[in-house]
Image (cartoon, rainbow, N blue to C red; front, side, top):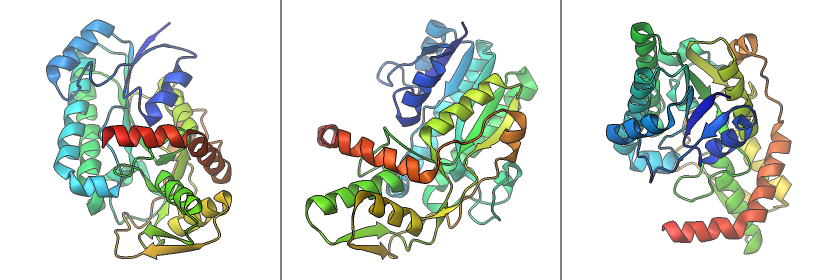
Length: 315
């Protein structure tokens, strides 16, 4: 059985990957307190210990618009260091294949939808998370350089906006779906008749259920793809306004949804073209948004107390 080193294996996506990949591989994960991938010395120790056949690099610094705006230098530095250290040791230890988890945030702010992989280099990312997006984009170039010079296969998967059971509901780092679920839940608990939403509701997003993302990554591992970037998404565009209204309806909230245009919208439109991955693998997205939202709401309601206690612990 081939051995997979899964970085970021205790995170939102990483936890799902650990379960799914574990059906077919010997998957090794670790805590960042054991090995800090920003440090070359720790990365060398990790690879020396595990000696993996395959690496899935899901380790990253990531979060919502607010955290990106507050710590852009940290986002750029941390993600560059993690990616460069992992790629370098993968090359040195002759890893068969590396799957680098990329992001839709790497795409330019203003390009026609749906985004194709070739569009990556046609402009600058949206300003609120450009440091994160550029760092991840730069790693695609580094991966291609390593492949040309050393032959190490590094494939970057560009994920749409992820959501699902196990999502990050912390105020400082959550994305739109967990943030809105938490706000609506609080409004229901306090009998409030209004919920404030960041932005004017017009931006659109391609929303991918985390289990579908994990299946897509597994399909890329098993494919003959050697290098380059692949979109993993649904190919379906949903406005923030429609998304928020869907969440409110599913949670039984009948009050007013106030869209605060003084807050940043983020990228105006996000929709990914998935024809490349559909052609080169046997993967396709399975979870429709309505079902995914229901599952995410149910997860939050069942784990509300644990989520709240964790937030208090880390404040």
